[in-house]
Length: 347
Ligand SMILES: O=C(O)c1ccc[n+]([C@@H]2O[C@H](COP(=O)([O-])O)[C@@H](O)[C@H]2O)c1
Ligand SMILES: Cc1cc2nc[nH]c2cc1C
View (cartoon, rainbow, N blue to C red):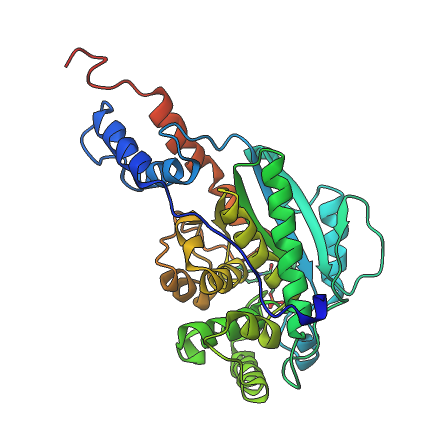
């Protein structure tokens, strides 16, 4: 019975190390000084291991934007009202948000999923998979029940598997949810054990003077809920968010299907760390796009040993950074496909 479901079951294969060795050999034969394409070489080799071929491809790209609202906004932790989540869903639907613009440029399909917004409208082009209309206020009790968190994880897993069955080779993690830097910092605090002072940031732009209040709200949520650091689903349910759970599910579903994942900013990274703690084998499927201005982002990426490709001082979310990094993955695949080898030159 669904109510009895306590955790998620997922099987993730390790990367194909033989193919990776072969791919490394191929990169070393290309007409360039050894190792001179730096991180692009590591990206290309990892993609080879993920797809089980020395000539991987990321021509089919998608961004999944999970949307949710947060009861904790009642505590005054965001610079914007919750209603902006629904307004931005309308904006995504019209193709006019930043992520739409960038995805068009980068050749990625945009999929927007209402997994937990408080918006009651039926918006065209938005997938309705609402687990509930926003989380409960984690400063006074759990944000979700465990069962709700597992349901949201399953929505994400199912969505990633569907995209994989349609031929998608890389998925960017996007989200929209006013208030969601607060649960992201809470998750980072429990799962990395770093002090809250290093993890709380201005999100959409709260004043510096409001930061201590945001920290106290998170501290209260941790005291009230006592999330178990050894049980990532417990942490997700008690101090997480529905869109964060959905994205953690996307990571698990994508990795289980051999699909690469581009992690976006701080919220996507919190979701990725939850998935990584549920199943550490997802680690090699993850690529960090950029470094957000939100301080918890660096700490979350370090906990997964990920190194960001871009430093653009962004803090938007929606999957914008992840979509911007797509051409870099594509460059890695194109270089290995199209460059001459020294043998081609007769050397
Ligand atoms: O991606 C990031 O690193 C990031 C950093 C700060 C804010 N955001 C976005 O801003 C919203 C959350 O900010 P806040 O202040 O409401 O917690 C949410 O919609 C996120 O997509 C995103
Ligand atoms: C306008 C706006 C757009 C966003 N996109 C992601 N988070 C956002 C937060 C706000 C406030």
